[in-house]
Length: 196
Image (cartoon, rainbow, N blue to C red; front, side, top):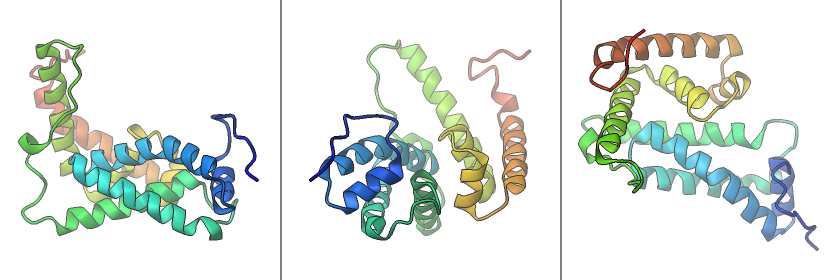
């Protein structure tokens, strides 16, 4: 019999996964609702394509469900494991693409009815500029910066996902941020920012 979860946001991911492995459907629903948006967000930022990001998110979650019966608590955090899977799936897709990244004009942005048209255009220009600048970074720098600053992963989580030391993560993110700042420097005024 499944124990009530009471939708407690503090319930540990590994505990929910263990409950799912024992047949608790409510635990699976709660874990899916908690993790899928984060997984999709990471995939979207890496791929720049909503449909591909959705495919990656589904595949990553399927892999999590498959390994649930063999999950060993304490070896890794569920989110760290998922970050690594998503990162690998996205990297595979990026390598298979012919002719490089998807053209920015083909990437659709979610429409929000509240901001003005000008605000939407400005936001899109900023997102496009950031996505283009991220695409110029070496692969590991791009992954480290994306995980740290968009997914809010900790340096130890990133280190585990990439199979490197925490010091190497710190170096990657610092170099990546400097490269992004340099790439975007000439666009500050056009993107509606003020220097100083």
